[in-house]
Image 1 (tube, rainbow, N blue to C red):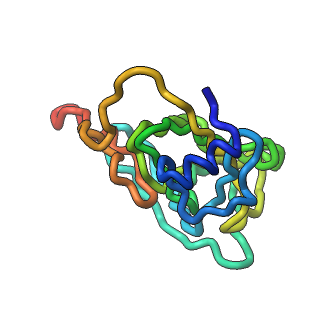
Image 2: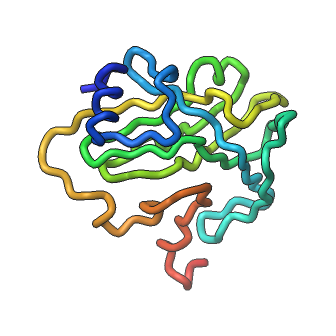
Image 3: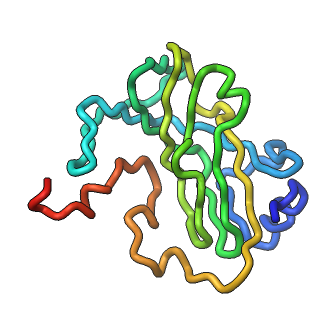
Length: 178
């Protein structure tokens, strides 16, 4: 079951959901409109699942930043979100998609207990200027059914993220295969 905007607001008041910073004007009928943070990592080397990704980091200045096709950018949400009670789904939205920006296609699920600023995978079809603080997508909260173990209790590579994380898949690949 997806929480409606009023249900999200009620859960925030009860402390069942965290959105920081929170703006009630960003609630929609069944989601919260999240924004792009001000930092990007530009993955500028060969991508290899068996090795850490090399990148350069930049801050989006007040005039914006032009995304270029063919590059992988890792960004971060402005908001830190979480809930011990609800799962989360984070996606881009139609307005960003209609600019030719693909955002956060591969990892939209935030587990119960997952309280982070989300790392975003970003690609552009054409050169496009983006701005820190712009609406970049929708966050949906889902009621879960059944017993759940806390995300924080499980060994997880990204459980305590508070910024941009590169892929850590290389940690799973035995040293002899790297």
